Image (cartoon, rainbow, N blue to C red; front, side, top):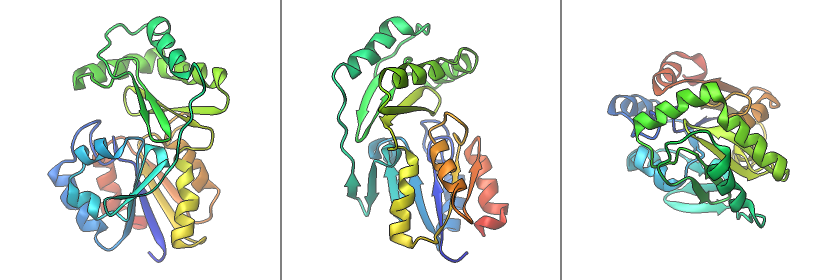
Length: 244
């Protein structure tokens, strides 16, 4: 497809949650991506992304947008990175929610992670085991705690936006500094008429992929897909005409 760029979320889209890519999926994906322009757009930082995707996988991508597009990596170097200035009391208010706001009791550590251009917040903690992550995810689907965290943050700090990412956390960034910010960067590199196709597992209102999906809805010829697993991503690239 002429002048077409493919964008992929990582966690839950190319890999199982917080796990490494499988050899089977990597073989299929890398064979497909060999002659295509491919970028990754993830909320994680480069260190976590590098643990999930091995070096030759990352090297085959044209670029890797990490921290929800606040950093662009290419050829193992940083092309750009946005700075983040947190208001006084911001981290204290996250800690207050952790201490008094959450009804979830099993906490494991690494609750507040300041990344380049954004903050990741989790009441269960990023140190949680896979089983505990799944338990929290099931609980959150009923209790909707992460939706409450989003409201808590955006009411206190309207200059920030927050979205649900992965199984256990919320991504927080200055308003407008979400995944949609990659679109003008790609237009500058590939031309205003570039066709963008995005695949993510949080292309739902409130999800951290949703701003990018909304941005693509405004551009002619662009498409986005909601998936639930790497298997669904594999089905897309093997069978959808937009990926041939």
